[in-house]
Image (tube, rainbow, N blue to C red; front, side, top):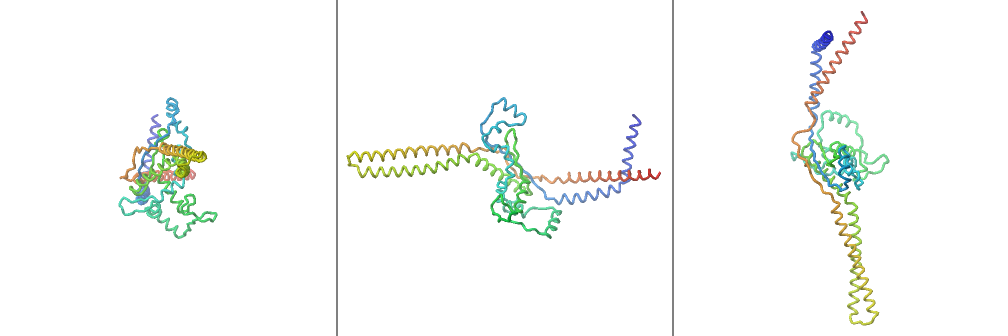
Length: 358
């Protein structure tokens, strides 16, 4: 046991002596890595992050307290699985994969915190993003070999300017950047939606978070009320037609009755009764359609979900990244370990050569 401890002590002492013997190499390598790490990380633009939490109203499709609570303890929401909606809340995060949803953020008006810039979000990302000097060098090299931004596709067709599913290369690149800046997550147990945004300007970061919330609310509302709104459009049309038909029948009956007020012939009375019955039938039809229209409008209100804002997006005060001190520390540790590995491998190779010669 004592021999083992002695060997361990000797090994540690040997390692420390080896490191101390190569202290000049460590100083040179770690100094260079420190300087380069600082130059790189301090040239990276600071980013800010904010988030908000939103709770949409859910349909009442409860499956029963005992079973639902038991399964929910394993992170499974049976109520959302039984929802009559084709798009369940679990699919909301996938909206960021849809070009139409992402491109709807292109025209959002944004203003920087210092009020020096006011433009669209697309223009802000395209022309006003701060970049590190390393990317600037890469950009200068790339500018030497410019590529035309084809507005069409491989088929050679002309691009529709406002078609989110027929983007140019530049638009597709901007959409990809936006996807990286925004994330939508949902808690499977509580159905609470969390929107996280990251940007170089704190005020724009909050503006985009609020815009995503608004567009997400509009999407959910439009989807939940789409059938009811189609019913409203249908009943509005046929109610207007029924009312017009009733008005004509009423005018025809009134004109005939006024023109034949003194007539006592049965033929005139029969004609008048027919016109009155026709007017009454059309009035009944108009009343029925109008009732259906009011029911359809009530259905739109009923299907419109209410949203509860649990946590609003605030203007971030401190930057969220990059973590400069952590980056420099990690690079220093890697340089130290790398130098140690180099020294021990080099000494091992020398010892092998010495052993072979002896």
